[in-house]
Length: 392
Image 1 (tube, rainbow, N blue to C red):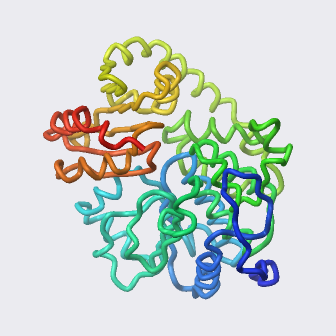
Image 2 (image 1 turned 180 degrees about the vertical axis):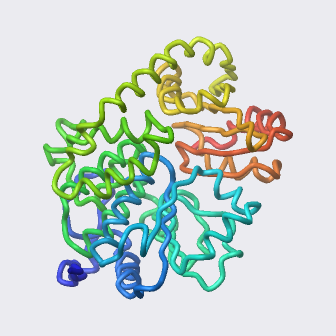
């Protein structure tokens, strides 16, 4: 039985003011509510024979957000792998799609495309398609519907939120609160560095003892979400495995992402052992420039990206870091940058003016890029020479 779109749940007072998202918040009011309502109507009107594709960012925010979006489709009577499909991509997909004719043909076979926690640089090859982007990075606004606080006059001055929180806001407008999904979305916002800005969408207060105590976080019971999303990524325990656990096995409780297979933990421990042995080799390549760090390392260490970034921030607080991994397949480098003092999005846009093969983006505090090998030295020098010009 298809569950009806709950019109009565939509708050009647559309003029409800949203205070600064850094303050405690607990209300039915949802920022950018009209856009969520517009998307809800679109989803309700998709016909049975129209094919749907969800494209999610391949990280701790994009995968859970895609799972919640898939649950919305399921409640509307859509069948997974029949009426809709899901794919996960890295940030550099937004650039590679321009050259990947096979992938373009695949995307063209869908009537509705929903991009979650990501966008693309070019949609020109998609004609007569409905395209919706639910994102909190820099996104292309030339789509049918863009739900992104960075483009909302009221919200763009507030603290950023996670994409998972945005998708949960859509869910609760349509079907009311769901404590399980709320917890998943909250942990995702923590993994993505944006729990405070996510509160208005999640309908959580800073006074809620289930999530906060004395101004600090209490990790909800699904903290294992951090482990399965970030720490093990291979063919067996990859993005689709994580997605299906979140989508198919979390209707009643969070057991499926707390009690994980023994084989998973064996792989996790093996990976940690390898990382411990590799630590010295990795950090031997560290280069420091005043308040800037460059760390260029091998492709095989990319699986440890999150741990390396956390360690860099611990060793060098308030320093802007660029963690660079070789990418032999694409003949270039994947770059993960972190900063509390430099606007990484503006710095990235500046670098793109000088480096034709540079692609990617993100937040002002955390961003990811790809660049071809032939331009990397030029890019690196541009960053070293100019990063101080982009202080917040």
